[in-house]
Image (cartoon, rainbow, N blue to C red; front, side):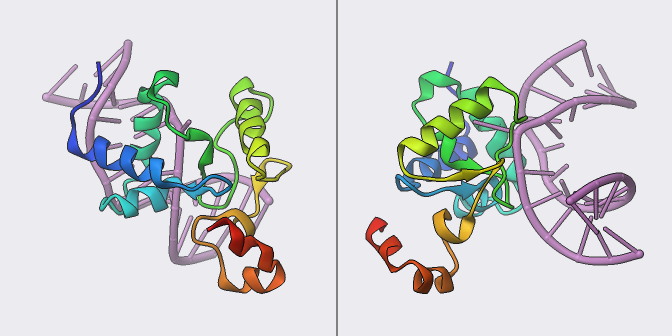
Length: 119
DNA sequence: ACATTGACTCGCG
DNA sequence: GCGCGAGCCAATG
């Protein structure tokens, strides 16, 4: 049973917009969906969505770039696999947002100009 | 109806 | 880096 709640739909829409090879935080997704400070709702939507939803859930991380799961969990490993498949590097339990963040620091582009090709 | 629980985030010490 | 509190609020028991 798919939720018809408009907030949930807005959040799913934003998640689908995250480009391959990029990641975004729960909070950023909420903000882009017009729901500032509703990061937890994003997590709830993803959990409720499940595998059948076909959402790129692996591109969603915590605000500091860490994955949201325990390092020994199967979900964590699956997320790392999916990210690696599209070129996103996970160091330890985190991703460098300067390189792979949807909205990354402009200075990072000076350090790796090739990142511009991903837009 | 009340308390707890989160795929969260941010500021402060 | 780490813990705490606050803000957030639907789902769960």
